[in-house]
Image (cartoon, rainbow, N blue to C red; front, side, top):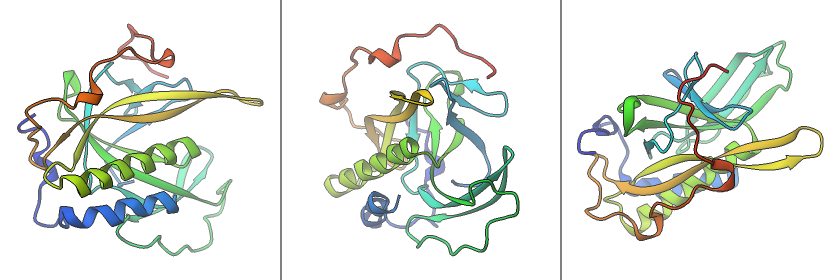
Length: 220
């Protein structure tokens, strides 16, 4: 992991100590623009890019703790009509009237950036954004987890996560999947990890939702 997340470093980043308050703001107030989009599809699979490529099973991803953003997005007929996103260290942006054709008007959105740490997608940068209740909850919980970690050990602010899922049964829409960012390790901004793995994140059996899959690449 020594060189995988050096892109997170930079003179324009705020101090790690300033992270905690900003990250915690997502608890009560719930994407970066550009780049490859990561999402969970309606069947509960994590996919990325225009071809809806499925991530490798058990791949690990580093989350840039300075990449959390919040704001609004307006959708119309499957396309983005407007988007206003800012760092969570800033207040939510002011809104103009929603663009014409926006079916739901402005929707609140949160997002973050990740870098793949393992497998054939290693070093790939992606961005994840969410407007759904489950997606926003997952981002909020991850942000609070980072804030708690920074309070304990600001030298290791970068969570390394596995992309998991959970689901519930909706009376009208059937099985609804929600993302989980399962923290399995912590690293420095330069990519250095602790010498020993965390005791409480040893490999365990996958939840019922996460039976091993043989699929790797698919187009939705």
